[in-house]
Structures are given as C-alpha cells and as structure tokens.
Amino acid sequence: APDHDSPASQFTKAARRENLIDILVDIGFETIHMYEDGHCGFDGSWTYLLAVKDSSNDYRWYMTQPEMEVEIHSRIRRTKSGSSALKYFDGSIMQTYQVPHKVFEVVFCRTEPKPLSCVTDVARI
Image 1 (cartoon, rainbow, N blue to C red):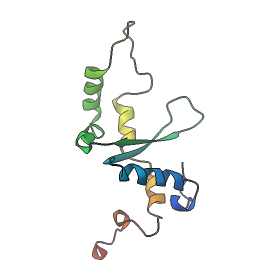
Image 2 (image 1 turned 180 degrees about the vertical axis):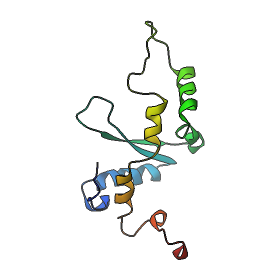
Image 3 (image 1 turned 135 degrees about the vertical axis):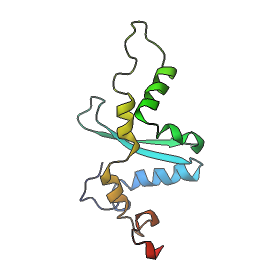
Image 4 (image 1 turned 60 degrees about the vertical axis):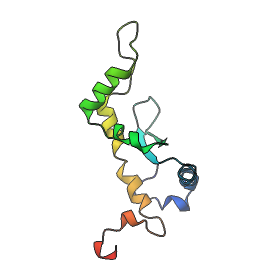
C-alpha cells in the first residue's frame, strides 16, 4: 500500500495494479472497490481489489451497519456448533471497507494528467 509521500502509481511498481484495473474496466467490470483489511492475522494491513460486473448490486457495498448485519444473518450458513461462521467480518468491519484509505485518494490525484474527479476548482470544469 502507498503512503502519503508516494508518487502517482503510474510511476511506481504499483503501475501493474493500475494496469489491472484498466483491464478489468476494459473487459466489462462496472464497479471496482479497493479496500484494506488488517483483521486477517497477517503482519500488517493488506490491500484488496473487488471488481463487480453488474453495478446494479453496488448498493450492497454501501449498506449501513444494521443493513449489513441483517444481510449476513439472512444469507450465511449456520455452523453445527451455533458459533459465528465469520471470524473477522461483520457490519462494522464492512463499514471500514466502504471508503478507501485517504492515502489511495492522495496518490490517485497525483496521476498525470490529473483526473477530473480530483479537480476542486469548480470554475475549471
């Protein structure tokens, strides 16, 4: 994962990730989410990429914590012991996935040419 001092991904070995994202978009993936998770028992946070072909289901990514808890409860298979089948995931964890870490936004906005979504001067648009 980048840090606040990292250059735009296009200028680093992370350019491969950017190329992968471009390829996913080119072959028809409509929604792409990047998120970090530090709850899986690795030495640090890992960055994951989720690509979805049909953006009509994107609302599930942005469910509130209670909505996500209900969705999990209604869809997850029960264990024989009755304990939770999910060790590291619940509605509150999902909330942390919904908004990418600020560092990804900062590094993305260093891309040349500057992406339109990074332009804050409304007069330029």
